[in-house]
Image (cartoon, rainbow, N blue to C red):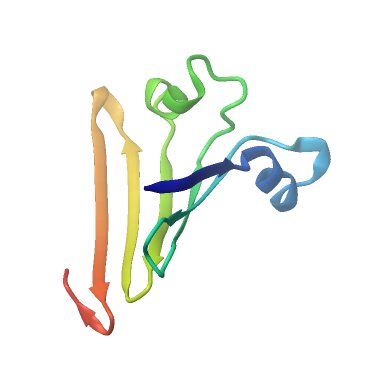
Length: 117
């Protein structure tokens, strides 16, 4: 039974810490998640940081799709851990001329000290 799942998106807050308060652009996104599953001794903890090459505020469209719809390059690193199990992901989306989209992702999954991927 899932007791609670929380997602916190602190995009503007992370932006203010990195840039001058006068020019607080939405170029940084921080997602943090955790959960506690009933009956299990260990909980889940994860985080992801994404950098957008341009400010997303003046762009049009729903926030979650702005980078894609407006062809804004972005780069992310994140992962999660649950006891001995851990996952690390690094990804990027770069938009080129003539509608070219280049996406790449590196992943590492391990249980204890044994890497799976």
